[in-house]
Image 1 (spheres, rainbow, N blue to C red):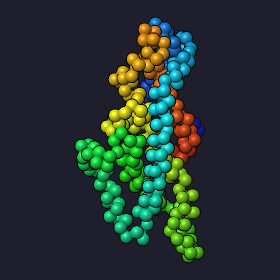
Image 2 (cartoon, one colour):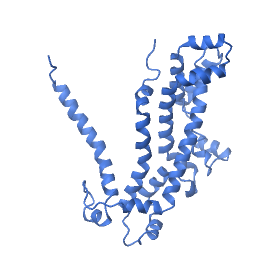
Image 3 (cartoon, rainbow, N blue to C red):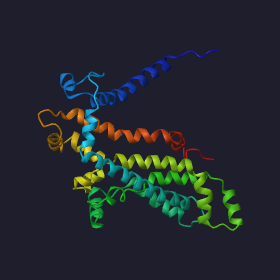
Image 4 (tube, one colour):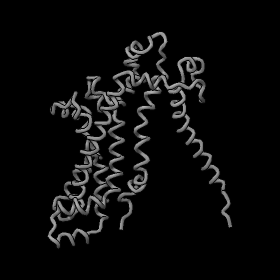
Length: 288
């Protein structure tokens, strides 16, 4: 006997359809404007279908040295920041998850405190300044390379691993470093992939840190550059002068092309880690 659709099912389907449209339409509009010519945009700024298809705006983006440099900075920050974050988070979580580590409870409390209380923006700025990190590449990921939330997730996952394998390895003469590298890390691949995704997206999308500490536009990541271009219209006059002249240059299609290029890396990487995403969300959620 087939289940009949209830009124609730129909209402939820309509609500979900509306929410999907509200998410898809802005992205679709950005893509359409990015592949439109300047004249088609000026004639109809809000068209949602291809009037005059053109990749000129993408060619213009790569003609500037600013956008490729910002992409390179973002890739470097994402790779270096994610690698360092995982190298710090996974071993720390392994230590906190073991009762043999006598200070695990104390360090767990210390880990939770920053999630509940913060010293504020001004002490944070003073601390980073005293470390001489502003206007350096390291400031883009070093002060925020470990998340307390991700550390607690990793700790919960480590506690679900079978302890009998570790005990057998100890009997065979393996030390903690060998157990961690040969047993715990291979078993933690879903955790590493999920946390790598969380950290990577966070580093790639971060614009607040460079807005606070970066003054040189040569160190701007792509998100900071897009923010300045779209919100403050910063740098558009120089780009227009370098292109086809300020009179013929229309900034909106160019901005949309920059946004699309900034989104491409996320859409490329996400399918490869998608199968770990659901597992990563559920890490530590099931208790025995």
